Figure 1 (tube, rainbow, N blue to C red):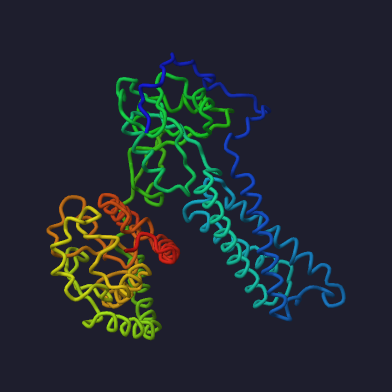
Figure 2 (figure 1 turned 120 degrees about the horizontal axis):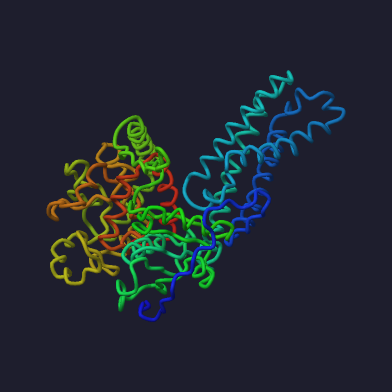
Length: 503
């Protein structure tokens, strides 16, 4: 942490631009942040290779793959040209047209994959139209296999590339954006906390520029150097930044944000705005310009409707199939528990569910039968805050139970709660019903059914503070979607295998 009384105030430098258009033939300066260039080149190679591989697999799987190509048996040159050159290039062109290589959508969030799927649909439509227009009799099985296989392989390649990008960002601190935060100190610190929660996002604040003067922050410890009264563009170049993030009320003065955008023209520095609207995901936010005024419209959370019915159906089907497939594992765990400590195999505890209704959660027992009696003597050793008691080395847990907790196998019986509609596969974690009333913002988490996994589990689980866990739960409630559920389920696999925050 640094103290802000170490910086020096300099008179502001007049902006270098005043909104007068530059020559149309002038070459704009390249962006300071260039990590996306080699990354996009890698994606182009991976996408091209994925389509070629899918076409080759379709040809090998179906003998009629060359059907419809004139003299394909005697001279397959034209077929190979179409299958292994023109079609892959067509994929790249259509993906580019769907902005699947736009740097704003790469490396984070589901938009990149949505654009790949849209591109796949566009490729299928284009191939169908060309085949109809040229009266080419193509093998439906071959074409369908090639197109679907290409889209799946492209998605796998994108996931792999994203995993490598996140690893570089976490371990080396590279391939990201070095940001200078502009605004009042509380606003900048709030944005700093938000963007540094996820190192894989690649947003690295390197400095804060105060808009309310030096006195507003004198003597306060800050995680990055703080400046005031400086020319922002000069400051960005001084600290090696490539992005300016305008926080909250810094953009409230009429014309100030527009003049800053003019000043950055041709500088290669990106400009982003962090409004005073936190924990609201992109799908709920829409910009609607009215007479030159861009209004930020926030939609209501999706807590009902067809999407929720689809979620319920997915939960019930997945829970039913999971229980059937896991019967042998359940029997093995039950035997191990009975051998470790005589007593019931399952532990059932009242929890608070949807709209405040209580239910009894199913879990494999991981503690000795007298665990509740021994809790009173361990309360002062609680290693977390909030409503839950947690100890990394809880003496009430027997050895097999410790393994079950670390591997999250103890939570598998909650599939019974999911099948009965008391829980969901994804949602806020269910809290004990005997810990008092849910007051204030915490009650909002009761708008949805609790889940077997959720943002709290993929973000640290027991290592999180109570306030952070509540914030994640509320974020999920406000921004729930089916795609988000699938993303959390996918992330849960890695977290469980890594045994992160499980004890």
